[in-house]
Length: 417
Figure (tube, rainbow, N blue to C red):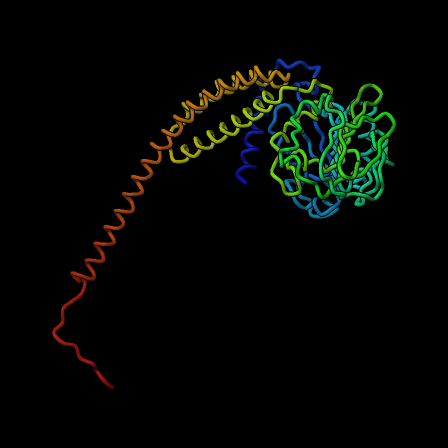
């Protein structure tokens, strides 16, 4: 719960900063403010990498719950019944073709059921083939030709994929990944060290067997089944389409069935969206990973600092001077945002080091303020407890020891019947 609240606070902070201060980003990249709009359609419970991307200012992500399996009832957008799933599709799916192409750059289909999306499928296909939106499909029981939904290959979206479905199959074990194109822009942007147990752990479920279409480029395949794992191609006009035949969260977030998160899983998700948006994929993983980690760290520390000041203010402390100092910090963060959106990570890191220094000073002052505030709380509490104890002791001594309220008698008599 605490982590969820922190992410919500951080998302709100980033949104305010971007909307009010981010004016110098070139409009030729992605959305008008330079971000990449991602429409995630499918199983929200399995969207962990994209849910985390909500806190990344490079992306603006919309979610549409569109799975008809029991996983729809769990996760951040639960749907208790099939009727709730269809209602969420109506509420959150872009209503018009203009809304779709104006607000998004990449469409992600992950365990999305054909029946749940229904009439919107042709709208999505038109946005890809005519509107220039990139397409990503992740594997699963309702993706490609999975057994829990009608096959995608027979739809207008499926005809745009670089793969052919194998109907009614899913769940074959993947023991390891074999990279076929180490020189590819996306592949070489990440350290595929399969000695890392979190990356090399086997995947037991969620793999969708497919075959390649003529002209498709296979970047990696799964062993021992020898099925394509990462496949891409470009449509007429340069629109990129990517097929990932495993459930995406198992690689973007955790290495195996119950493995630990792969250290670079978040970078994989971000770089894949950058690639699909036809931007240069950053290749220096050390700098890129450091920049993304520093941004999330600073955002979390800032939100915790605000929460600490709110706590002090609830006890009557004057936080106005410290809160006014956040304006200068936000100005520096705003300077870093265009650098990050334009993928100038080294410059962004230098700017964030200034923010980190400002945060250290603010945190030290906040701790001192908290100690001063709680000192008076402790004093008042001690006085209240001590005073109550003395009063109770005096009453007890008066009644039970001195017995002031009792009258002495010489003798008592029992009057029997």
